[in-house]
Amino acid sequence: MIIIVKQGAQPTQVQDLIESIHVQGLKTTVVVGTEKTIIGVIGDTRRLDDNQLLGNPIVQVVKHISEPFKRANRQFHPDDTVIDCGGAKIGGGHFAMVAGPCSVESREQITEVARAVKAAGATMLRGGAFKPRTSPYDFQGLKADGLELLLEAKRETGLPIVTEIMNINHLPLFEEVDVIQVGARSMQNFEMLKELGRTDKPILIKRGLANTIKELLMAAEYVMSGGNDNVILCERGIRTFETATRNTLDLSAVSVLHEMTHLPVIVDPSHATGVARYVKPMAAAAAACGADGLIIEVHNNPARALCDGAQSLTPEQFRDTAELVAAVRATVAGRL
Image (cartoon, rainbow, N blue to C red; front, side, top):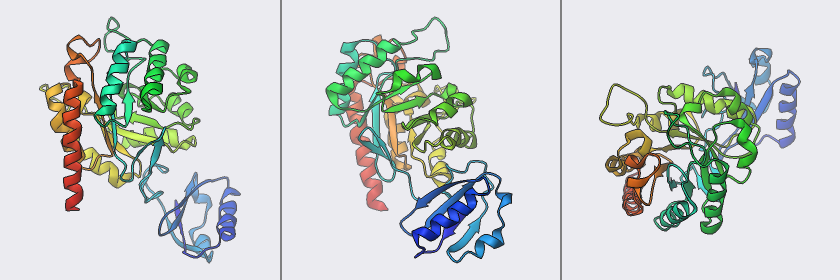
């Protein structure tokens, strides 16, 4: 349920209304927008009488939300959410360029890539320390040592870092990480999502390769229901019958999600295509359709990468991609 408060309502009147809702054992989320104030009510709203609420002189409208996701719902929060990721903002017109290697391999590798992507316009550095791999024999990442190398690159370049968590027991290691990524394979690890909801860090949730948009939003809801509203959604391709690419990039998800939720939406063209030469055009397409950012894999020597070299751009290719994305965004903005 959402309650739209009339303009001019006094703060004390709004607080009295909120307290009367809490007495019924319900939770509230208050969003003060540019044009109106909305009180989101979470729980068994059958305890509240619509007519009684409408009898309150400060209540303008009472609406019931049928979708199971509440806090992530745009009806709860009409304005786009802007998330501060260690100084780099995303959402509400702030575009994020997240770039870096699939996995951290050495101090020299991650430092060289970090310098290069920053020079090319990246606003955040990505890199895997804990790596989920289909084969148990593949490189699994440097783990805690990889995290420390990422933090060294952060200290040198000033770039906020984004890296994936695979086990909630590792959470204490992520204290200095700016954005915690929940990978596609972990999107429905509900116990992990609950624990991340108790943190105050931005959480980047990647859509599972066989999950619907609604299921992605419910994953976000798990985090937000714990009190952490700093959630970023990522479209990274879904599994279809097509075999020419690693996955099928669902760019329509960007428009659908922007209609359904206030949360920022970014696109991962690297995992979506699995082929480096397709990353640039898909990145441009993502920018054109209104994505709030991109997360792109960049390696200083893709041919020798220990993980996902085939989909990784060189620093030079990333610079060209970043320039094209900037041009596309400028063109689209000029036509709006």
